[in-house]
Amino acid sequence: MEASEQNDDYPMIFPVDIRKVPKSLEEIVRITKFNKSEIRLLYKGFKQDYIQTLSILVRGSTKEKLHWIFRFYDISDDGKLTKQTFTTILRSIYDLLGSSMFVHQPITDENIEKHSALIFDKLDSHHSGTINLDDFESYCLHDVQLVETVEFLSSNLV
Image 1 (cartoon, rainbow, N blue to C red):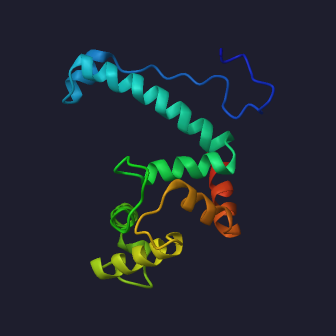
Image 2 (cartoon, rainbow, N blue to C red):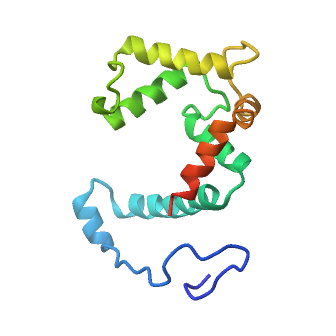
Protein backbone atom coordinates (compact mmCIF):
# COMPACT_ATOMS: atom_id res chain seq x y z
CA MET A 1 0.00 0.00 0.00
CA GLU A 2 1.44 3.37 -0.96
CA ALA A 3 1.80 6.02 1.75
CA SER A 4 -1.03 7.96 0.10
CA GLU A 5 -3.34 4.92 0.08
CA GLN A 6 -5.42 4.15 3.13
CA ASN A 7 -7.50 1.19 4.18
CA ASP A 8 -10.86 2.79 4.96
CA ASP A 9 -11.62 0.14 7.59
CA TYR A 10 -9.07 1.71 9.96
CA PRO A 11 -8.13 5.31 10.67
CA MET A 12 -4.68 6.48 9.53
CA ILE A 13 -2.43 6.40 12.60
CA PHE A 14 0.95 7.09 11.03
CA PRO A 15 2.08 10.33 9.44
CA VAL A 16 2.00 10.09 5.65
CA ASP A 17 5.49 11.52 5.26
CA ILE A 18 7.47 8.88 7.17
CA ARG A 19 10.87 8.87 5.52
CA LYS A 20 14.12 7.56 6.88
CA VAL A 21 17.09 6.92 4.69
CA PRO A 22 18.48 3.56 5.83
CA LYS A 23 22.17 2.98 6.31
CA SER A 24 23.87 1.24 3.45
CA LEU A 25 24.40 -2.49 3.66
CA GLU A 26 28.16 -1.95 3.69
CA GLU A 27 27.86 0.42 6.64
CA ILE A 28 25.76 -2.07 8.59
CA VAL A 29 28.33 -4.81 7.88
CA ARG A 30 31.05 -2.46 9.10
CA ILE A 31 29.32 -1.54 12.39
CA THR A 32 27.98 -5.03 13.22
CA LYS A 33 29.38 -8.52 13.32
CA PHE A 34 27.06 -9.78 10.57
CA ASN A 35 27.89 -10.41 6.92
CA LYS A 36 25.71 -9.20 4.01
CA SER A 37 23.77 -12.46 3.69
CA GLU A 38 22.97 -12.55 7.40
CA ILE A 39 21.84 -8.94 7.38
CA ARG A 40 19.54 -9.53 4.39
CA LEU A 41 17.99 -12.55 6.10
CA LEU A 42 17.53 -10.71 9.41
CA TYR A 43 16.04 -7.71 7.63
CA LYS A 44 13.44 -9.78 5.77
CA GLY A 45 12.39 -11.56 8.95
CA PHE A 46 12.37 -8.36 10.96
CA LYS A 47 10.18 -6.52 8.45
CA GLN A 48 7.62 -9.30 8.37
CA ASP A 49 7.55 -9.98 12.12
CA TYR A 50 7.55 -6.28 13.03
CA ILE A 51 4.64 -5.45 10.71
CA GLN A 52 2.61 -8.47 11.90
CA THR A 53 3.27 -7.61 15.55
CA LEU A 54 2.37 -3.97 15.08
CA SER A 55 -0.82 -4.94 13.25
CA ILE A 56 -1.90 -7.23 16.09
CA LEU A 57 -0.98 -4.85 18.89
CA VAL A 58 -2.58 -1.80 17.28
CA ARG A 59 -5.58 -3.29 15.48
CA GLY A 60 -5.98 -6.85 16.73
CA SER A 61 -8.80 -8.19 18.84
CA THR A 62 -8.22 -8.89 22.53
CA LYS A 63 -7.88 -12.60 21.75
CA GLU A 64 -5.29 -11.91 19.03
CA LYS A 65 -3.32 -9.78 21.47
CA LEU A 66 -3.46 -12.48 24.13
CA HIS A 67 -2.27 -15.07 21.58
CA TRP A 68 0.64 -12.77 20.70
CA ILE A 69 1.51 -12.31 24.40
CA PHE A 70 1.39 -16.09 24.94
CA ARG A 71 3.70 -16.71 21.96
CA PHE A 72 6.01 -13.98 23.24
CA TYR A 73 6.17 -15.67 26.67
CA ASP A 74 6.56 -19.14 25.13
CA ILE A 75 10.34 -18.83 25.02
CA SER A 76 10.73 -22.58 24.44
CA ASP A 77 8.33 -22.41 21.48
CA ASP A 78 6.56 -25.58 22.63
CA GLY A 79 3.07 -24.20 23.26
CA LYS A 80 3.46 -24.44 27.05
CA LEU A 81 4.42 -22.08 29.82
CA THR A 82 6.05 -23.46 32.96
CA LYS A 83 6.85 -22.01 36.36
CA GLN A 84 10.46 -21.71 35.17
CA THR A 85 9.24 -19.73 32.14
CA PHE A 86 7.54 -17.23 34.43
CA THR A 87 10.63 -16.97 36.62
CA THR A 88 12.78 -16.26 33.55
CA ILE A 89 10.30 -13.67 32.23
CA LEU A 90 9.97 -11.90 35.58
CA ARG A 91 13.72 -11.83 36.08
CA SER A 92 14.07 -10.26 32.61
CA ILE A 93 11.39 -7.67 33.36
CA TYR A 94 13.01 -6.76 36.67
CA ASP A 95 16.41 -6.51 34.97
CA LEU A 96 14.94 -4.33 32.24
CA LEU A 97 13.11 -1.95 34.57
CA GLY A 98 15.83 -1.75 37.20
CA SER A 99 15.65 -1.95 40.96
CA SER A 100 14.52 1.67 41.39
CA MET A 101 11.08 0.72 40.03
CA PHE A 102 10.41 -1.67 42.90
CA VAL A 103 10.77 0.30 46.12
CA HIS A 104 8.29 -1.74 48.20
CA GLN A 105 10.14 -5.02 47.92
CA PRO A 106 13.79 -5.73 47.17
CA ILE A 107 14.52 -7.72 44.05
CA THR A 108 15.98 -11.00 45.20
CA ASP A 109 15.91 -14.45 43.63
CA GLU A 110 13.60 -15.54 46.42
CA ASN A 111 11.11 -12.73 45.74
CA ILE A 112 11.21 -13.35 42.00
CA GLU A 113 10.50 -17.05 42.57
CA LYS A 114 7.62 -16.25 44.96
CA HIS A 115 6.11 -13.77 42.50
CA SER A 116 6.39 -16.15 39.55
CA ALA A 117 4.87 -19.00 41.62
CA LEU A 118 1.96 -16.75 42.59
CA ILE A 119 1.25 -15.83 38.96
CA PHE A 120 1.77 -19.37 37.69
CA ASP A 121 -0.54 -20.91 40.31
CA LYS A 122 -3.34 -18.50 39.32
CA LEU A 123 -3.03 -19.51 35.67
CA ASP A 124 -2.49 -23.25 36.21
CA SER A 125 -6.10 -23.97 37.17
CA HIS A 126 -5.77 -27.69 36.31
CA HIS A 127 -2.58 -28.02 38.43
CA SER A 128 -0.88 -29.73 35.50
CA GLY A 129 2.46 -27.95 35.86
CA THR A 130 2.10 -26.26 32.47
CA ILE A 131 -0.14 -23.59 31.00
CA ASN A 132 -1.32 -23.90 27.42
CA LEU A 133 -2.83 -21.19 25.25
CA ASP A 134 -6.41 -22.12 26.22
CA ASP A 135 -5.58 -21.89 29.96
CA PHE A 136 -3.84 -18.55 29.43
CA GLU A 137 -6.62 -17.10 27.29
CA SER A 138 -9.39 -18.32 29.62
CA TYR A 139 -7.75 -16.81 32.70
CA CYS A 140 -6.94 -13.51 31.01
CA LEU A 141 -10.37 -13.02 29.46
CA HIS A 142 -12.01 -13.46 32.88
CA ASP A 143 -9.76 -10.85 34.49
CA VAL A 144 -11.41 -7.52 33.62
CA GLN A 145 -8.46 -5.44 34.85
CA LEU A 146 -6.01 -7.46 32.75
CA VAL A 147 -8.17 -7.10 29.61
CA GLU A 148 -8.45 -3.35 30.21
CA THR A 149 -4.67 -3.13 30.64
CA VAL A 150 -4.04 -5.00 27.36
CA GLU A 151 -6.45 -2.68 25.56
CA PHE A 152 -4.99 0.43 27.21
CA LEU A 153 -1.41 -0.46 26.37
CA SER A 154 -2.21 -1.21 22.74
CA SER A 155 -4.24 1.98 22.35
CA ASN A 156 -1.19 3.98 23.46
CA LEU A 157 1.38 2.38 21.13
CA VAL A 158 1.06 5.08 18.50
